[in-house]
Amino acid sequence: MYSINFNITQLIKLSTLFFLSLSSSIIIAQDCEEAFVQANVLYNDGKLSQVPEKINSCIELGYESESKQIQARRLVILSYLYADRLDEAEENMLFLLKQYPEYKPVSADPAELKNLYGKFRSRPIMTFGLLGGVSYNQAHIEQTFGVGSEELHSAVEYAPKVNFKVGVTFSYLLNNHFQLNLAPTYENVVFETSEKPLDFSTTTMKESQSWLHVPLVLRWMITQKTQLKPFIGVGGGLRYLLSASIEGTQSFDNNEIADIEPSPITVKEQRKEILYEAYLQLGFQVKSRMTHWTVMASYSYALDTFNKPNTRYDNSELIFSYGFIDNDIKLDVISLNVSFSYDFYKPKMYRKYRKLD
Image 1 (cartoon, rainbow, N blue to C red):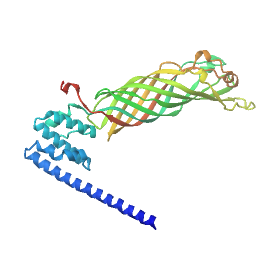
Image 2 (image 1 turned 45 degrees about the vertical axis):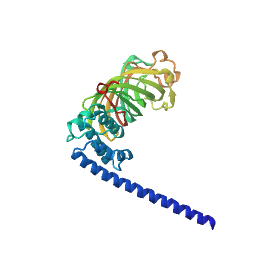
Image 3 (image 1 turned 90 degrees about the horizontal axis):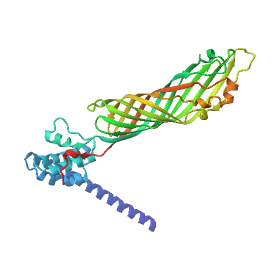
Image 4 (image 1 turned 30 degrees about the horizontal axis):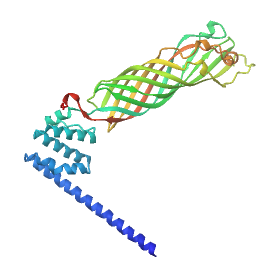
């Protein structure tokens, strides 16, 4: 019985504290709304020095809505500007941009406010996000090899596949027009080659490669004043090989001879561990609140073949079971990527506007 009474007493106390706190918050909010109205009256009457005194405490507490908080801080900044108290105006503009990094004066705002805003770095300094896409590889066969005549193995046919990539993307904004972008991704590359190693059989080899792809690109943002921002990027990259395997089939023209069925064969030792490439991007960004979407097409141009010429004859299973010998192939990749990134801001006054101590 004592325990039940104790619990009821505690519940009553907590409920009382909750309602007192709620009532206090409502009263403070009402007082701050009234202070905002009075501050506007003081501003319109030219009593500029009294405006900050009237609403600074409410700004520190924070108005319930973002819009009202911005209006209050803006009113204080204008009061300082027109009272020739530039230091305080600059300080409050910095406070405003730190709290709301994407604040921008509207066209109807006074020129003095726009000029003050222009003294500050208000763009993001970096972005970080997730990236996904599809890719399509294009082979450049430099030289073919085979167990039969050159006439047979030189007629090799190459069939690319649509592949996928996932990763992260990081951009450092050098200024309003140039960004340095690094986007490490896991990329899968699959393709098939078909050839007649001998005049009585056909070999089809399906190769799967997994790469860590790391392109570093300098982007030029063509325009900044629209929500949709097109860009061009150029740079280079490297690919680090994670795995490589081949599944092969060999079918014979003579139906009495059983075809050789596919079985995975690891060929990582016959592939170069690192490849280098030139890189081109073309795309656009769509800005949203504190974030942005990026849609881009990219083209990577391989600077070297992916196979190791000196290990061409090391895999006896490929040679004797399938009549397959590595060709010298460069692999270019075309991809379509979509990323979603968060924008990071660090507002500050540009150095040329800072006062020397």
